[in-house]
Image 1 (cartoon, rainbow, N blue to C red):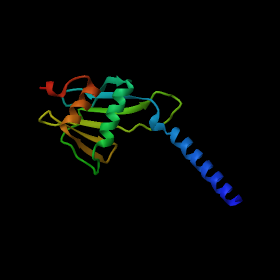
Image 2: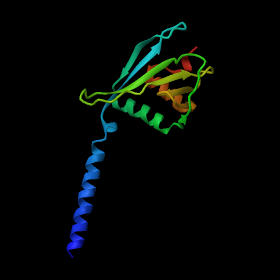
Image 3: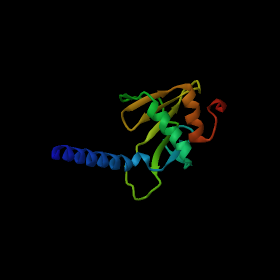
Image 4: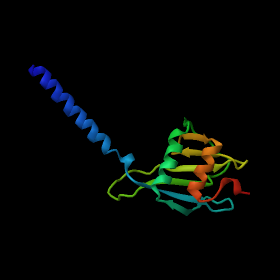
Length: 145
């Protein structure tokens, strides 16, 4: 009987620790997205374009990126990224090194390609490219020339 109580107490403590740990996950913290666009023509300089603080829009971008099929590979693109963006925590007490996402618009102006950090690549499908581009830039991908 004592061993069953000890086991139940252990399971309860373990469950409590797991629940507490999951609730402190920094990915649940509110974030902003800082977006920069490359200055044209053919420069390697970027200027601040947009800061997204709407939690629903940040969640949309996170979902698209999480659902994307990322490949571990180094990609050599023909030109510099059209845009780049990072997630920033709204709470200044949370310190995390930001990951830079670089975004290229496809030549057909229908999809986007993204490199995360130095070695992860994905090509976003047309539907999600339209959503992602509009959230990040405030413009419609279909209206580009």
